[in-house]
Length: 237
Image (cartoon, rainbow, N blue to C red; front, side):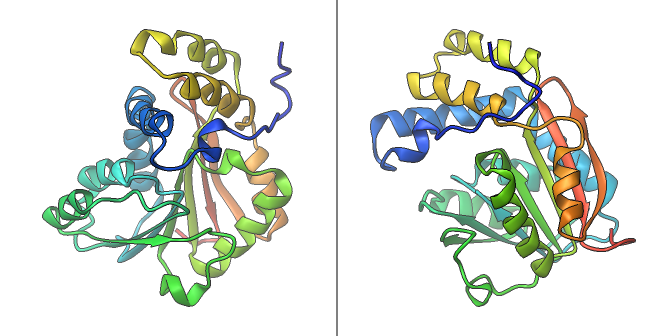
């Protein structure tokens, strides 16, 4: 049995598949449902409402995927946050025109950037930003890479808001019932691996502090999510 006291990182199958592989397509479809079952969009929106005092004009999302997660968040936030530009970074071009149009319909402008967040030049992102959002992406990186990523984020925005897998027994057991929702083999493997690589306690806060930042919030949200909010400097919200 996995010792949940420590993070265990292994490559996830989806990351090694071509974007048009049938298993990759099926797994991304599963992820949309899993995000819904985890209430990830609502958790992210609640973190934004509670911790971002000034409505942002520009948001950077890392690991944007197909854009549907952040579209749900935008729909929850659009009334209080109008006319936002969101730059959505991912290594794979998955954001369709339908998603862009849906953002436009609520008054937001989505700009996908196909790049690795570790390599893309700041100029290509047209920073700085008011806020960085991350959903189910930070657990892919070990502490050294997170230190590198957090250091970079702090040069681009005053705040990071993240919703990651909670590393605990309940989420790990829950991955065993995913066949009941028709999850494919790739998803079954990756879901369990995501929990093993997830976070608990103040693990993200400690890394954020190593970069000179100020943790604002870290802790369990719901049954499956570890929430984190970090400010680049004291008093930034």
